[in-house]
Image (cartoon, rainbow, N blue to C red; front, side, top):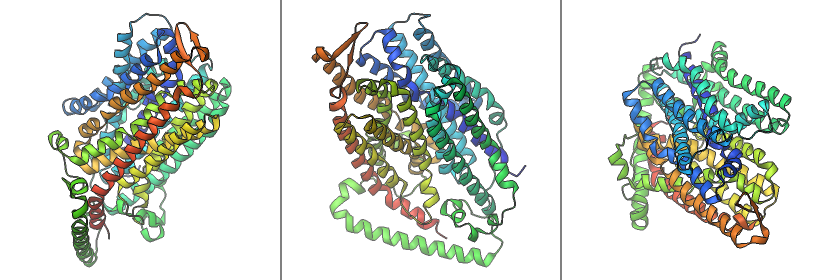
Length: 562
């Protein structure tokens, strides 16, 4: 087995964790049953989805716990939280126990906390074992969180296709089983190794192959999901999905076991010679002293040129944008920020607003997807729409690796990619406001999934780059406290509009077990218009963040150009 293979086992372990712990994606699959059992209004149901998102408020506790406990202990703490939260909800929805609304709210909160803890553990493992290519490792690992809904639907259909409450049981048990499976590689983590030029090139090729296999996995789930309503066919498709997930474990060995000429000749594989391969090459990989001297001089000249260009640009812009774009502007990437420093950074709060009005909006949409499809008369399509959102979120997360593969030819700040990713979400809400057809609903769901998926994956790398990789476990969990805030505000808006239309139009309202059910476009039309306006605010904030940070990124490109 090639040198450094154990770190790939750790990466695949994080992929498996992500693939089976994105349990927040399937909330829409059982939300109607939960609403029926508890006999609550849409507003009260919204509070339960908010409670699940509120678990992210306590995500920083995982970062702190990692300072005092072994990682495997924290992993099983997260597993226990999920088992407790989802387990009792499952007993409740099966009507085996009866719980007051307040305790159900707490159970949703605990379950949401477990998701955030799993994510933080994966972030720490990726950054620790892939310091040179951490953005690629993060985007690949995080992307598989997007296929959770598709995998859980396949498992549920493989058991029985008629019991939607089965999702809660799977949410409680499957993460426990996966944690047990990945325990061995986590206990036997390799020590970080120095990065040579040859090793980084090998890693880059492996990442490319892993991303291709991940793309195949996503396409497989997307196109074959529609056939999984039959139990036998669902089992066959599930076996195929399992094979692709296991193949991820062996692919790094397969790639590195072959003595391809491109591994020793970067010229025949231009992609492998990109900037992300050359981040940590100080003192490694070069035997030609003259070449090293020339390269060192060239780097110094490039850095000087970039510094002069940056200074001239700042002078030209200062007269117009001093208070907005340049105040407290980040000068370099990778500087570690303590919590106190983070709270005093304008860039952080602009970033916070961009995430709040961007990626969080996609999560709120997914939480309401069951009620949206029901109100538009497409209740039978709910599972398909949830899987479509989840799978497109997976592709969006996978696309977050594009900046790292393209940055040799395209020097564009990652915050710029972040801003561009918010555009499809705005278009989707405009489309939903215009028409309520099933085609428009599917297209909008796909766009929102792509957009929010990219934002979720890119945000971890951006937090690491802007505020320091060693502080990401705490800083990123501070950032995503915007999710429960947005979930509460945007979900509250949607619930109020839904219930007001149900109460105000009694002739068009169905009453079921003393619950109001709103039917028609009016139920969410006003909500879509408001969500569109909010996403525009997120888009503007994202571009402001890009303009404030682009110089730091371009300076970094200059220092790493060979």
